[in-house]
Length: 221
Length: 193
Image (cartoon, rainbow over all chains, first blue to last red):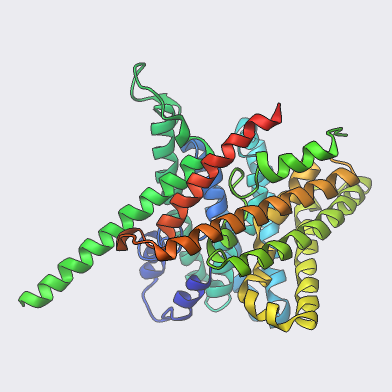
């Protein structure tokens, strides 16, 4: 968590709005780069459907809480700001909880208490504290949307891989046919750790290759 | 009302359904504070204490909310109680042991956003545990959290001495270690029969 605060302290206020949106998706992707909000990520990413639902719920809470926090940022005393932010977040999580219950009861059951646990997702409080409490409403909304989309995509990547390997299906549709021998460990808790570690390795490998290429270009020019 | 035996409840929360390795709760401090064995132990103790206090408060709040018929306030009041307990612990530790206060640093206030603590409060309510059961469940969860934190801290201290490729250093190798630990804990599943 500490690292994200350090990155955000240097956020440039004058950057164009599209940057606020795009940085959450790639450069500062909450899961693959900042490694924030891991708990729900690992717990509900055993199928692609659960992962997508969790991602959308978190993105909604992130967007709404960012907007509210930034619109009240000048009226909240510094000492009680964290508690205020958490209460704002908890309100929106309660809304989402009842919303999902109304739309799809089956989904609500399979996600269980993890919807309520969005309250303590460090990503949301981190964005409220590091970004929304210092920037305008529109900028915070873009930031929340970008981070939300980035979170959602990363969660979907993880969920799709785990469902594909552990169950041989994607969104409940069989992909590999009857002869596929499911890799059961991938849908078990241990598989969550392994799949995430593999994605992180892939990302740091890409970063390494890119850095090496830049170095070679500098040397030859 | 739930009538699970207290001892079963403790073993269940601590080993079979370990909060960190099976439920994935409290992963942030698990990855963040597990670099050194000594800090990990103290962090585990602090979290266990907050867990115990907030679990007792959560039991009272739940009873109150049922009495006034306002279940939608549950989440908000739980998190408010946890935040104030953490504030209390923070003041207490600063007064009694300034050295420990500095060692824990930013991770002390961050206990508020530790999902394991809210997790205990939510699970005990959902499963309808009584007061004694809630306390034992919180104790078990705290012991399990500390156990997982100490295990991974020990492994990471050893890992410092090992030669690992640059690519996997940091979070990736820690996650692989956590995955292996989680596989080991799957062995405890047999205890539940």
